[in-house]
Amino acid sequence: MADAKLKILEAASKLFFEGGTQALSVRAISKQAGVSTIGIYSHFDGKQGILDALYIRGFELVAEAMTLEEEYDLSSETVAVLVRRYLKNAIENEAYYKLIFGDHSAEYQPSNEAKDVAISAFSILVKHVTKLFPNNTDQQNREIAIEIWSITHGFVSLRHHVYPLLGDVNNWEDKAVDAAQTFFEALVAKRS
Amino acid sequence: MADAKLKILEAASKLFFEGGTQALSVRAISKQAGVSTIGIYSHFDGKQGILDALYIRGFELVAEAMTLEEEYDLSSETVAVLVRRYLKNAIENEAYYKLIFGDHSAEYQPSNEAKDVAISAFSILVKHVTKLFPNNTDQQNREIAIEIWSITHGFVSLRHHVYPLLGDVNNWEDKAVDAAQTFFEALVAKRS
DNA sequence: TGCGACGCTATAACACTGTTATGTTTTGTC
DNA sequence: GACAAAACATAACAGTGTTATAGCGTCGCA
Image (cartoon, rainbow over all chains, first blue to last red; front, side, top):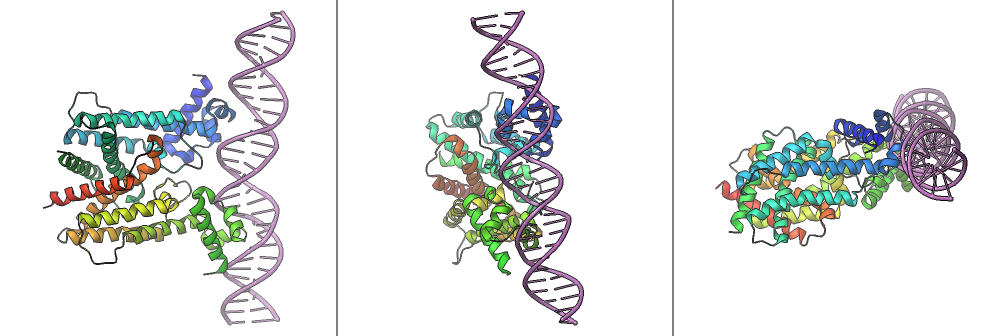
């Protein structure tokens, strides 16, 4: 990678991690990188390209969180592990998470490359579900994966957007894990 | 309400409904309203106030969707009715929904008045749960309400941010309702 | 080796944004 | 009617992402 391109990406990542999208003006990025703004256009297709690189990284982080290295059977306990890792990523990498699930349509649309990375991350989740339901169609297991994702992401999103309004809710992580496990067990029972 | 204030609010609502937050520049609003931009500052505390009024309206719409006029027992069927109404509101009033759950922290923070409206909307949901679990503490029922909200909102949020990446998923509404009912029934069983 | 094309770069300019400043007009109260 | 406050039109400001312009360096080809 060209030196300037790397500098720009590192500068953008640093600013983004610390201050979210609002910290990402092209002037701030170029200043932090020690280059002029034009590099953002020649190397990254403008701010759109910067956001795309970060969006891709956000989904890569999700994929990493969802990847289990050890052999496993999908059980309620495994679901707990996966959900905890998902939640941990969502909190530690909040800016990335908010980029994926925020409303940036005015300034950013994911590229095809970004869409591929998102699909790849999702397929990790589907693979987990398929281990438990090997006789399901791919579509059926995708739907189950979406359901688990929905409840987990719902907890994260409410934490971002609703908890600040309602006041402190204790043991958020344990509650989210418990809810996801309850739901998972109900899904399993329903298909047995 | 002053004539200009009403004109501005109507103009903003129209632009917002049609084009989301990106359609809401102060110049576009004032042009649509037939006044100059200064009215947005004198009547609404700037764009912040416009967004606040719309955010409040967004939660009012949620509250309306969650309000049941008839006497009811909270059952799985009632959950289905509530979830369908929630989903319908989320789709028909997408801009409002995205304002509540989008990442606008750079340009908008909810006022205390807005927070009160949000809390009031949430309490409607808590009241439904309390009908089923009258012996729970308020905190316990709030947590159950959060859980139902999480899975429902999760489906909406994934529809907004993930479905465009994954391709068409059929019968989204029925799947969301089914998932919410499954989860609700599991919650009920767990507390019986 | 020289020339032209290409890519990268610094800088300025552009059109837009929300907000503030300035001066004028309107409204309300005494 | 006088005065103060509020509302208002307009211009200016500081910031945004992007494009335009000019210049430099490198590479490939004749």
